[in-house]
Structures are given as C-alpha cells and as structure tokens.
Length: 386
Image 1 (cartoon, helix red, strand yellow):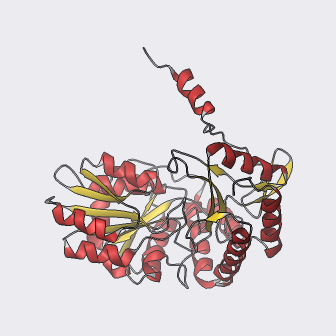
Image 2 (tube, helix red, strand yellow):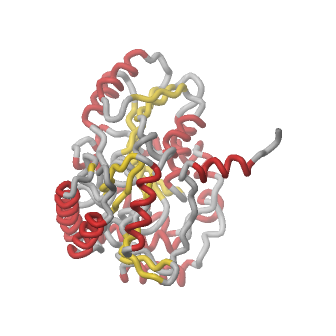
C-alpha cells in the first residue's frame, strides 16, 4: 500500500485538526504582528514578559558579541563555554540543588533523563495528562510503562505497591500545560517514599511563575528536598530558550555519562545562557511580575465565569476555556482573531476527545484593559451552548 500521506492529511483536515504555523513579524510580547495586523497576544508562554525585556535583549546581544552566535560543538567536546557553566551554577542555586545541567530543549531533557535512568526491568509511572515529551521519554526508555488517573495519588500508590520493578520512577508535570492545574506533589512524594520510588517533576510551566522567588511548584508545595529529579525550561517564564535538569551530584554525573540527548547535540549558544542569567535574576527579584499575573488571572476568571464559560481549576497563567467540539473551538478562535485577539484552539490529540478548548495564557506584559477587552470580545463571540 505504501505511504499514502495524502489520505492521512485529508483526514486531519476533515477532523478540523489540521495545524499550520503562523508567521509572526514581530517579537514575543503583549502584541503579536501577523499578516500586517497587530493582535493582542493571549497564546504565548512568555508568562513574565521577559522574552523582549530590554535588559535581557542587551545581555543576549553582548553575549553574541563576546562568544559568537554558535557554540561550535557539544558540551563534552568543546562547546561548554563560561556562560553555560555560570548558568548551570545559578540554576542549581536557584532550585536548591547540588548541580544543574543544561539541555537544548525541554523535550530533549525529558527524553535524556528517562533513557539514562531506566531500562528493561524498570518501571515508569505517569499521569494520564502528562506532556508528550514525558510520555515519549517513558516509552523510549524500554521500562514497563504505567499511567495513572490525573492527579490521583491513591491510584499511584496502588500501582507502586504492585510493582516489583528494579527501579521505579514517577514522572509528572508540576503545572499541566493544557489544563493549568498543579500536580499534588505532597501525595506523590509520600507514595514514592513508601514504595522505594523516585519522583521526577517537569516544572516547565511553574519555573519563574510559582513561589515568591519564582522557584516553581516544588517550592510552593514544600517538597523540593523530596523530589530527586527536577526539570525546568528556560523558554517560558524565563523568556529565553532551552532547559535544565537539577538534582544531586550523582544524578548530574549520570546524565553527563548516559543521557544521549545531552551527549550528542550541540550546546545552546552562549548568548542564550548570558541572556538567561539576566532573566533568571529578574524573575527572582521583580515580584511585581507575579503580582501583576495574579491580578490578571483573578480578573479573567471572574469575568469568564460570569459569562458562563467553563473554566478549568487553574490558578496559573494558563486559563483554558473548555468548549467541547473541535468545530466550535476553532470557530471561536477565528471569531476572536477577527476582533484582534490571538488565541489558539487546542484540539485532540493534544487534549482528550470532546475537550477542545481555547488556551488563554496571561502575561505580566498584559494590561488590565487587555483582559477587559478580551472579556468583552468573548461576550460578543459566545457560542450558543456555552
């Protein structure tokens, strides 16, 4: 039969799930420039508004002038430059860990950790709503793969109790990227401690946003010392690019020796590390960014609830509006775009069947009037069955 790609693509179009990249003609921020028109941007992960912050941009420019635009090699050949080392040390201190290790992307970090720590004879336990990179990392590891109901600590403990695996690794998102809710990390830490398992938290959407200093989910829930493996990304709350894993000296040495996604890839540009050192400092010190987010989140939730929209149980910048059908979610996204708002419709397979939604994301770069304008547009574009 061969590769009948056209049939697969046609089916994706019929399902209203065909994806296309939009070409942006401006930097990430409060506004997005698309096709010659300016939109209020409510679909970026730049939660603290640091991606186009002047001080961060200046640090990137100076880093490029000092270190060039490419590292030239993998970290273990000759690509590990002084800004990389400084950033790893800063991230370790920020997260209260012995060491941290940089990866080019969060996807590569998650694949690298699980394939380095697990193999046949081991077991990995994952929340059903985990990010695709976590699921793929677990599957690629060769370990026995188990999924438990979303945020269900008792179900996890039951699965761990039945497992006779050599190594048991529990892997969860700290903040779930499509729902915006947080994992019950205390429950998970207790389950792991009671059944000789390790807990790994992917805090891509918590770093920078949660905790008074932006240290993320493990600090807000008081479990930092009970989580052996912490992954965080740099391209969301911190506004740059890349990722890191933080933990003990032995963990980091293990990843350096065995994580193929670290060993066999070119190091990120040192200029990115230089910029991240500045954005990390600003995320720690500039509490007004998190204060602004909290105000905007509360205002949006109150307004959307009053309009009759179905909200998810989220107190983070990720504020999904649950619509249901793919067609309705896409139509609402397009109607809002006509009114000058850029918000992506999220459809299966990214989310479960029948749970298509608009993933509204808020940023410290937004103004109160931006949220009010969005709520007014949502009132005008409201689907009949909301």
